[in-house]
Length: 178
Image 1 (cartoon, helix red, strand yellow):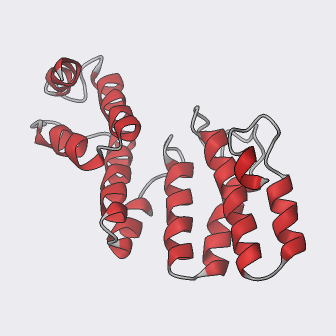
Image 2 (image 1 turned 30 degrees about the horizontal axis):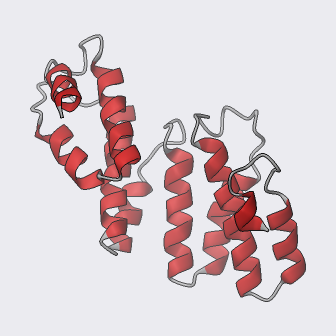
């Protein structure tokens, strides 16, 4: 709509413009909130840039490309895009979770658990491992649920119970754990 048009005008000024970064992040947030990954990505990438896109923005675009490929069932393409996202990116934990889902869908339980464990085992105050934003705690809870589901699939019910029990009482994912 009109807000996206305004954001695109700011993006058209290039990465060195003062509000380019916030405008780019907002467009990515719109894609995530609306789940219109392909549409918003197309709009972002249609804005001609005279300067190189900063690494943080390149990672966000890679995340959107990964989401588009994941939705299409093109898991190798999705994982190829998601693996390029830096640990310094605000979307790293989301990308890592999605990589875990891809591996779980292929029945690669050990690799899926490795991705989920990296998220779930990270201390909440370890800001060097993940950039914490409002999605982080939901992703962490989903990783715990994923670990529980993998343990369940492997008939390790004690381990499944342990992972489900790790979902905090204030999480909106608690009903799923129960």
